[in-house]
Length: 338
Image 1 (tube, rainbow, N blue to C red):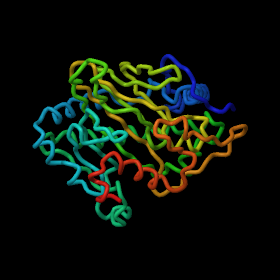
Image 2 (cartoon, rainbow, N blue to C red; image 1 turned 60 degrees about the vertical axis):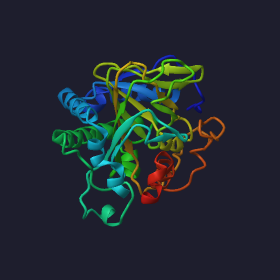
Image 3 (cartoon, rainbow, N blue to C red; image 1 turned 90 degrees about the vertical axis):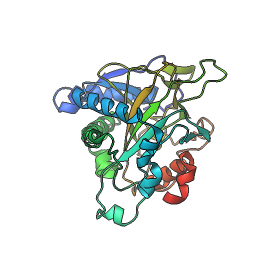
């Protein structure tokens, strides 16, 4: 295996994962394609994923209904109400990337845990009940159904990633994702107020994701960009697909063979853009360790990363890493969670 370096690519590959999802067909060919995509750009589209199209349409419909409401109504489920569970709504400008406000609003969700769940009773940050809007009652049920479908898909894709690394299919589920940390966001990006390049405001600025795998549903507005060695590459919406990308912890596990690639969003469509990132992450309390891979040496990515913070120098649980990141995204909530 070759060590990953910043590679130049001009488009994000499309992979049919139906054999991996169904368990029939040539899953090893799919795994090989996933491995190549993870090494070369860290992003790939998936088709043949099996997630019900009607469910996706309902999710988009009810989400638009929610965001069309006035801010006061939306703030009835504000993140300040969610507390340590880190759930609920934030208004435009309420989330920061590299210290700068993003041009987006959104709702944070996660696995639905009852108050008597051991992690909730232990007051574990980012675990608990979701906040669902009474003004759009169908949204809550739809979100839970969608998260269940995406969790199943996440397990199948991680099995494919394990095979791509010549590991047992159950490698990640045995060590990290038997009980994954599930985080789900619904973002609404309003139209950019200025089309001039000097005054553009990023929907979300350059960043990498924190965990192992992100599965993104996006509407047809476009705006997602992925960083290649030669510049920024558009990842436009493709009907029937999701966009997948690997996060910092998979970068760490593979010693940099699979890199978490920086990306950003710039909504120039002239209308609102909906985005649905689903994060399939390691268990909150598990320590993330490098995999022993042949011919792959540990790397120092500090000078290459956008934030100058090496994921390979990190030591601790995934929860430690995640909290260090999200406390910078919502500084006003930091004391509530940490």
